[in-house]
Image (cartoon, rainbow, N blue to C red; front, side, top):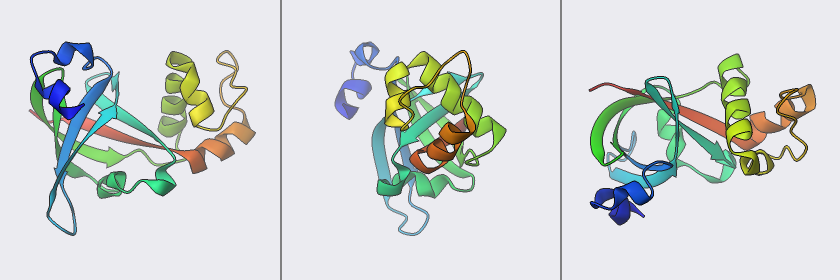
Length: 139
């Protein structure tokens, strides 16, 4: 997927996927992975499911620089974790579940009603099953 996103054919996938690259906080090693994203104003948001079994996002628990290959263009950004349980976090989960209904199931909320929004029980679930990283473009 990274090769496709770096190629002249990136438009086939770059509307939904980007490549995020960063240097590890502890190791200093360089990492790059393709991830799904959504735009939030001028920012780019990556929603994760099952953050308990993924580790890459932990580099962004506090602000950390990253490079994004976004729509065929290299961009610099500062990534940070959207605090789980915050209003901003729940707004992103709802936006994602409304725009991509299959993601609601990935978050563990089978009966999500887009008109009602997240119930308190669903909020308790998504705090455990989702994470959000906001990338502010800095270039």
